[in-house]
Amino acid sequence: SQQGEEDPQALSIQEGENATMNCSYKTSINNLQWYRQNSGRGLVHLILIRSNEREKHSGRLRVTLDTSKKSSSLLITASRAADTASYFCATTRSGTYKYIFGTGTRLKVLA
Amino acid sequence: SAVISQKPSRDICQRGTSLTIQCQVDSQVTMMFWYRQQPGQSLTLIATANQGSEATYESGFVIDKFPISRPNLTFSTLTVSNLSPEDSSIYLCSVLGPGGAANEQFFGPGTRLTVL
Image 1 (cartoon, rainbow over the protein chains, first blue to last red):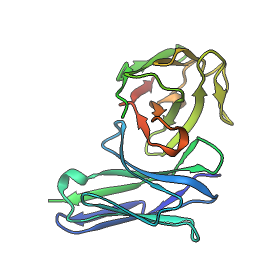
Image 2 (cartoon, helix red, strand yellow):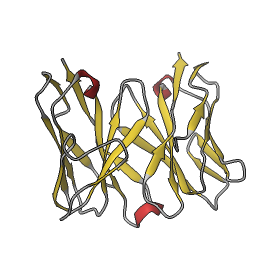
Image 3 (cartoon, rainbow over the protein chains, first blue to last red):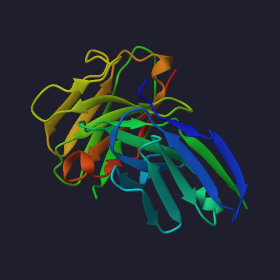
């Protein structure tokens, strides 16, 4: 399967703590994107990082990409109860436009 | 960014019937996709909806079961035919932003299908 894998599968933290999720993939990529999904609704795009970038920030989000290890991480700082959701990474293989989704991490932030 | 709407937002259908899901985008887009998300699972690409030609299906998905229409650059439909309980899933359409694969992919709110 080309599907990426994310770990942990589930994560439970206290409000104010940081949350880190990891994504591993199998092939060379054009870019990698992170999405959030609340309670089985549509996906919200969080951040895109290109294959020639190593780190990107957006508000409380920090994404890193290590193409040598075929992995990415998403860090959410100072988490809030509203961050409770499932988080997915998605990659496009070099030369294609199709996105392959990771298995997802279910994050629960306790107030 | 693109604003995408889907109809219906949810439905409960009987075994053996069909459901057609509509996806409307607020701007013309070249690439539109349909995904399935089974309960507790990640997203799986069903097909790419091509304007003016047949959809391109991924391995494991066939046109007879998932016929797709794409009459113009802002609209597509996915039909899930001959429903069985295993088809209970969330179905999502998505589009690529301008600039092709290098850009963001935007998703509709999804259609939650329950088959009894």
